Image 1 (cartoon, rainbow, N blue to C red):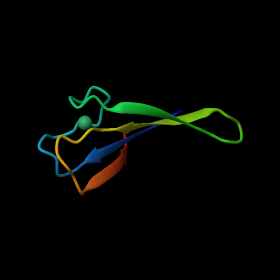
Image 2: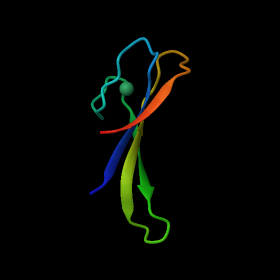
Image 3: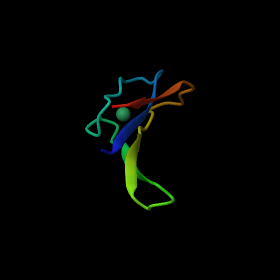
Image 4: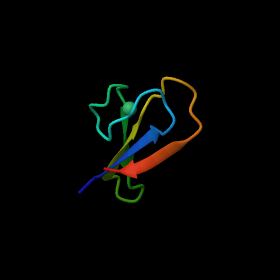
Length: 60
Ligand SMILES: [Zn+2]
């Protein structure tokens, strides 16, 4: 089972959904196990609408 991690700003102007359907259009990046080259998860980096200082990485 792949892990899905969302990196979201906490103090942005909008609330970010813990979903790839979030209105900011987060970009998914695959994470691979360097030993086996198997994909082990996907990190979605959300796009802040304004400079944010507080970010949270959460596992959906
Ligand atoms: Zn978002």
